[in-house]
Figure (cartoon, rainbow, N blue to C red):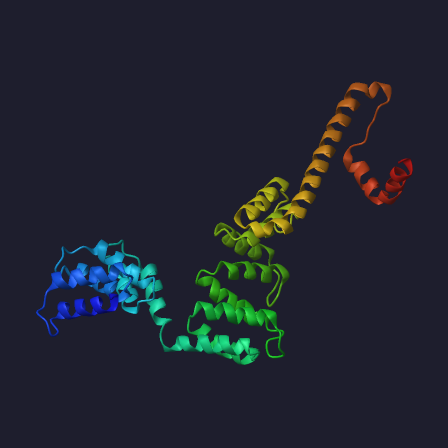
Length: 320
């Protein structure tokens, strides 16, 4: 029994009712850890970090603390934070230490608010749910920040309607903690001018951040903006690259992207055809100008075709 072996190992470790023996504690902790007991894994890490009954080995301590932490062991999370903070067995990293300490804090009593808010939301009490999520969001809970932003973004109740500026702030807090979904939403807010002044450059900046994190929606948005020259120079080939990346990143983005790709191919072919026509017109004008040939460039006949497209279409259909 893994629990019994971990418990007996703990007694051997501290000499509780039995003779203290680190080797015996190590043996029982190892057997319990192999069966998935998280306390045993944590205690193995403690033995390795202190060099009790084993050769001191920070790398193995981190290994066992990580195994336990991945299953939500609070003390293991805290010890990993301290090892990253002081550089024991790993390069010193304050950001990594912060993430581990944040994970410890979010498992405290205030985390109960998230459970209550979740239940209230599914019971239809959206405003009460929002109040709890908002409180937790201000305390730094990234899940609460994302949910607060989502509820304000939906605006499904009189209390949440028309509060896009508050939604944007919540999305920004969530994005600061690494949420790429929030980065895409911030880009949408700046693009459409929701809750703030419209700023295409800021929209592009946030889409690029999310795109670099392999967010298919951000890639699609950048492709569309490159295709139509919105907020950046028009570049049909770069637009195609972003569309292709969107499909490669998320298969579900294929169907909304395929029509755009088809339209893009038509635009590319038409553009190349126009360039070819201009080259031929220039060539023929130079070769046969003495015979009175003077073909106009596309800048002359394209506007005319755009103005009289209905007559041209009727002529084609009549000819068929």
